[in-house]
Length: 113
Figure 1 (tube, rainbow, N blue to C red):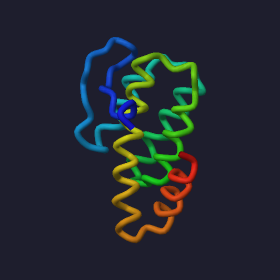
Figure 2 (figure 1 turned 120 degrees about the vertical axis):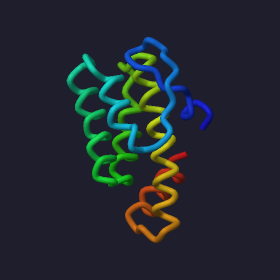
Figure 3 (figure 1 turned 135 degrees about the vertical axis):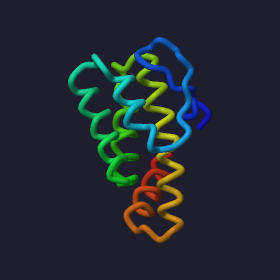
Figure 4 (figure 1 turned 90 degrees about the vertical axis):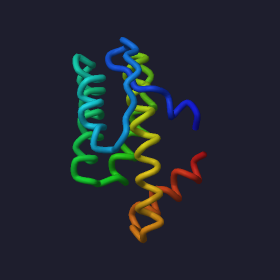
């Protein structure tokens, strides 16, 4: 989990900015994935859109799929990891608050670890 809380940096430049809230994820993903390969940019966009909709189960699942991509730059990986860690927190909150979809995604995530 420590790797998932890595500092956010844009486009591999290592600017060290940190996300303070989920609302910052869309802008951070846009910055980190600007100029990325189309498939990476699409997944980053999907994470951002799900966050804007407050669909944390979807955002978390897409962020996990994005983390599997080995073509990311260091900055992109850091942005995705920090977003994923923050989304795990939001997913846990939603599951604890009675969101059945979030509980199912969280259960599947824990089972895969």
